[in-house]
Image (cartoon, rainbow, N blue to C red; front, side, top):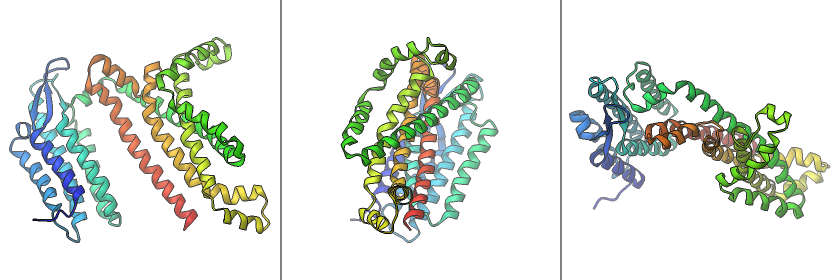
Length: 383
């Protein structure tokens, strides 16, 4: 009986292989409103599908062996698998759809499952070979180059997601800008409020419950209920000339901005409190013994050492707010949620994905960048 050497690889490669063999990969529609025809991987890819299957099976086989360069080999195979999946998919899509200009192709569960497994493989094995920066760079650059080339040459024009984007290109850019503004402004405003509140809860122990309990209560209020609570006061403010000039009303950007800001207060405030509590008392006593004043201890000792934990709260707030800003589309605030709710109303999954996929992409990208910055700050402060 063989001992499984890599259970993570076994799970992900088994799931990817099963998705390729047993699940539908695409749905072909002659136009937007017609009933689609679903194709399995072998039906759609034909004999070229064997390339993808062999690569999945190769990854599956590697899970039973342990060798010195296995992690590097898994990463390279995952890159080739993703490139093969993308290239063969666009190749077959063009030949199937070329006969009808209104035809469109939507991805099915089999495609998304395989991509999800590949994403987890990349996440796992990039960490395991993080010292091989050259191989990692070549791998990701290869995938990016192929995607850019295919996109610029119009190879994806038959995919329904691209068709929806082309129809709503102007709206997409505007709503993406609004989504980014709502996210950044809400988190920045939340940080300006929550960090002083967190410090106050730390500095005055009797204020801790008075500060943290209300922030916790705000976090438990459902988004739609909070929009309803804000409707009346904001409608009243909108009648005043100053606020009317700013566009404040019961619907629009104002309730979305205020609600998103309120939801950032707890993670930032709680991490601020935790960050200051995490500073070693012996370090503070040593600083006082050297003649530092309370302000100097705060500025030169407590705040720098607490900053990484505070920044973790800001990172969590950013990730939370990018997703939460979808609800702004429900109250006329704009953002990518506009496409989500429009797609729900029109029963158009691809329109929903047009709003969701950029959010997922930028959430992953921003989380990676903020984690890298946080790690760099910790290494500077603690090494």
